[in-house]
Image (cartoon, rainbow, N blue to C red):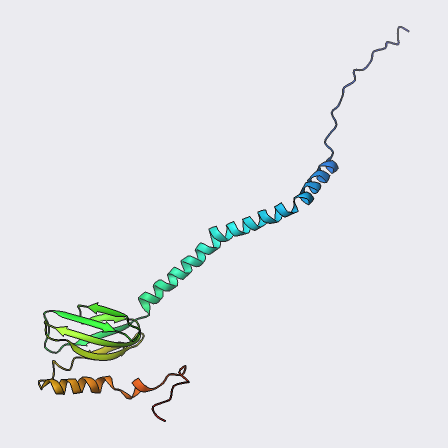
Length: 182
């Protein structure tokens, strides 16, 4: 018996390894319990993405579009002053009620019909009408500086200039108005 020694092997207590199936079971159970929480977090992520990435891009594109329209959707206006000038004041009014004041004979306006009141060298204002077109140059000729007649003749020429046959024509979208040609 001497050969038989009862050397007991030390028993090592091993900790149980985590059961992977048990972990997936618990995580699946938790996700099942909090299904509403997952959808709200996804919604929050989507809204956060929209607010931080997509909406600023649309804002920048809109700003660029407005900038390009304002700066490049214009027509040129040239005021013809035959005798020269020291001071010049041009008031431009459109039918929508917008107005602008210029102190130079060359300027740009958005396309529309305009009524101009021009004061040269502090003299009384002279009136003229013109239609400004996109990428075209519109020449506005002042009648009173070229005519040396009475005030009645000047008013008659201004009235002739304002009454053009095209001014009373209806547009395609004004189907309810009667045409002046009928």
